Length: 117
Image (cartoon, rainbow, N blue to C red):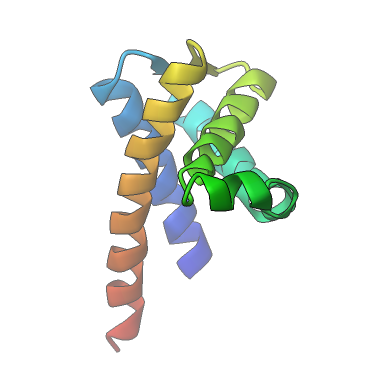
């Protein structure tokens, strides 16, 4: 149940990103659900591999290169899906930052929701 709630809220966060920032466009809530799923899968499967492969660059940049990796995951998901569009890498970077901020809030809220009995 916790995973489903987090997924639904992540889709709502994508819609909020599209509303707040014109560089990201989402056609419908259904598109947002699919995009949230794809971004989650990318972050679960591809992101750890990219973090390990780019470890020297990440260390030299004091961790700032992780923002680039997040933007690449966001941009790649938009490139694969029809109802989710990102205007370019800069838009992907800013969109992924906003989406990550919402993700932190969602994680906190979901943990509090499911800790109470």
